[in-house]
Amino acid sequence: MPYADPEKRRQALRDWRARNPDKQKAINARAAEGDRLYRLAHKDQYAQYQQNSRRRNPRQHLLSDAKGRAKRAGIPFTVTIDDITWVTHCPILGVELAYIKGDGKVRTNSATLDRRTNDLGYVPGNVFVLSHRANRLKSDATILEIEAILRYMRG
Image (cartoon, rainbow, N blue to C red):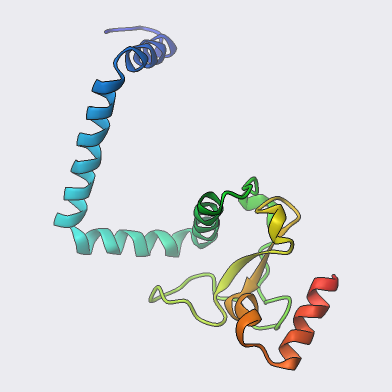
């Protein structure tokens, strides 16, 4: 299927996939199985790759994780990395935020994304960076911590 024009080639492939959905499904399944087997065979290397990726792009990973949560919950997700103000300290508790998790574990000062109004979803103007501690205070907060959250929510 030699085409001089790359766009014609892409269109021909789209047409073929539309006419042959079962074959395309089989191709996708073989590719997914190959990926799975590769990851099993190279488990340590793959874990190292993931860890390095999180170190290089911590903000992108925060966003990617939030997108997965939004998809599972069925809530809107239209925010981009540029829509968020990436602060150095938690606006509620004042602790310095750790964007990079060296050992992959979540700490109280780990940066997390917070939706000010949960029903709106992850949309510009509704997503803020907080410490993990501030984001989970609903379950085990002291009076002083609740007052700090109240000051934040009042804006």
